[in-house]
Length: 124
Image 1 (spheres, helix red, strand yellow):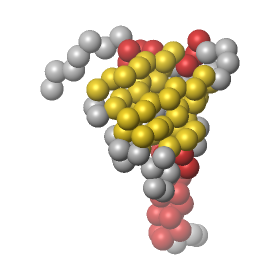
Image 2 (cartoon, helix red, strand yellow):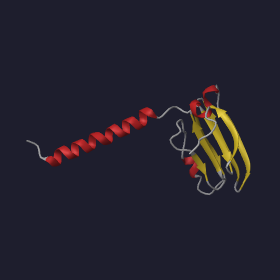
Image 3 (cartoon, one colour):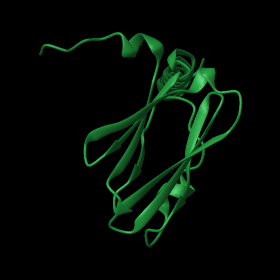
Image 4 (cartoon, one colour):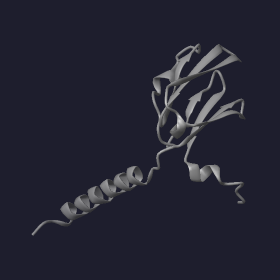
């Protein structure tokens, strides 16, 4: 007969694996990317409609230039003139789990699904 400690550990591992599986299964593929600078929406891109890679260059930030690259279903910051370029190191994003953020240039790229584009407002 197994001890209670074994069953508690086994149950905890199963719960953790289930939570991770649900998280990845329920994360929808993003279809739109919204680019914000200083909290103001600059551009919205339909990622599902792209047939080729496009580059969007934003200038006049603190460090001047940031280049955003988008292709079918995914987006990234490909170049930035900021000190550490942490936003470039974040790589490609294709889900809305986390936004891409460039703090020195005050740029945020948010990925959202088509269902989220239809929401007019949230009352809380």
